[in-house]
Length: 385
Image (tube, rainbow, N blue to C red):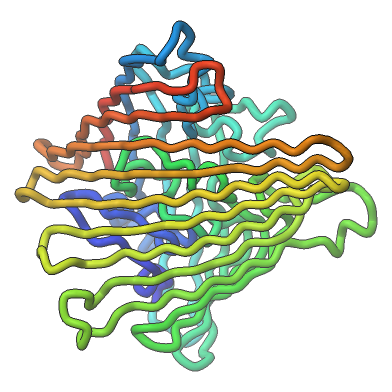
């Protein structure tokens, strides 16, 4: 039994799956795989492009507006405003687990392009390489109960409503909840399915945040400061009527950040629910992130609400609303706080085979920036193979 058969899945809308916490974070690359003739190897991937325009920075300088801080839109990913962009190319090689009692397999996911910048800090010393290894793990299954699965190597984090692969999200641009979450870990992850309704994961890794073979620090005592993670997923049974198949997911990641003495803690809870309207799916997500270092404490809270409606076989609509707030309490200094909120609307129309095409508008408000608001327009074309 493969892990992605029981992980939290968002209901399919058009050609895009509303990728979820577990599907995305434990094994998120589910875009149109192609079967290879080489010993059952599956080769898949995609090319992600966009056209982006700043409709209004609510001031004179878009760089000083919150739009610049949206994940993969600015800073070390270059400024993607007002132009044409290649975002990323992803290439995946996977040998799935078969039905053997002691089954084995593995997966490698490679990133090329600007969105690889900073995703994996071990790419080079400056974290500005446009190549990165997203996942690379050995997958094993042991004949324990219903089957105990293990991933050993580099794997996606286990928490979050959205994922790195834009085509697996309901909206093109990432949420602020995604921004405060981990990305990848180097370690061991175990997964077990008690029934069709209950699944769990648990693991240990070097650090909370990205970086292949990263360590918390150089001191010998840091060897014992690992990152621990766990999650539980519940699926509504058929007896619950229109809610059947809806999912509730919660997970925790706690440990040290790569290359520093920081300690981090992430908590996530999310729900994806079917509604009495057959083509309408709704969701909600809550993220809490805390960073502490030598008495300093930085906390972020993010609430996200989602809705997706499939109007026709090719046409679908997706909406997201977010509200977040942060509190910074330095050791011996004056504390500060702030809030941010945003609205995102996406229209998707799948005219060509294997192509995700969508138009999106996003408005952001953040009292941390000199230009406190911003509105952006995005056109996103993704070819999957």
